[in-house]
Image (cartoon, rainbow, N blue to C red; front, side, top):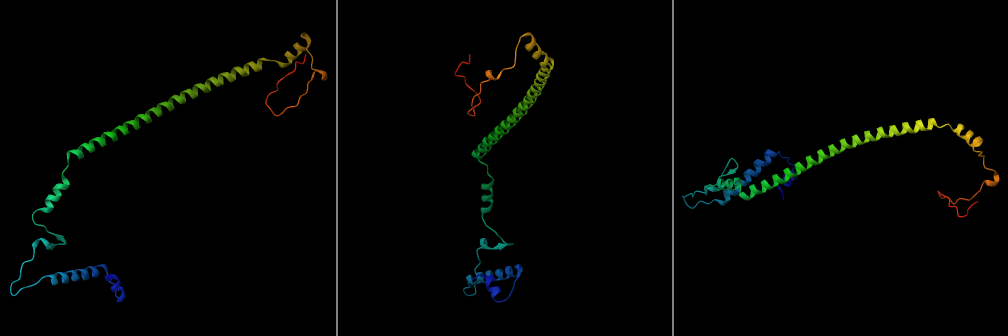
Amino acid sequence: MRHKDRDVREGILLTVRERRERTKSRNQKRQMRGQYTYGNVVTKTNPSTHRRNNFRTVEGGQIKRNNEKKSTVTAGYVLFLTVMMCVAGYFCMSYLDLTSSITNDLGKIAKLEAEYNSIKAENDDYENRINGAVDLENIKKIAMNDLSMQYADESQIVKYESDDTDYVRQYISLE
């Protein structure tokens, strides 16, 4: 059964500090049970198991050796870090190169769009001048008077049925 459940069952609500003190006293009682005295001679306990300020002291420098093992850097680790730094540098340089090429391409696209717009404006201007220079009434007068052209009669008009296509093929000559 857990200590917390026992405390709640007894109707006592304990603070964290009280629980720690209770646990500490229980642990001390357990340690006392394990120590025996034989006659009038009290044996010393092993000093390596004593605790000071909740830290266990270890004789023989075991902690020092563990710290030395943790702090050593092997040649393989240095080589691995060097290779990873080179790979990261390569990716960074590739990224910078790619972004600069995109920026250059965007500049070229902007120049080409400006050139396209200026050429389109010139073409529209030429088309308006050509359309403005053509006088359709004058062309109709010349065609009817000088060239003897006439509008088509009802007999010259050929009617056909369309099957919703975009073009018509002529299979028979109308002459």
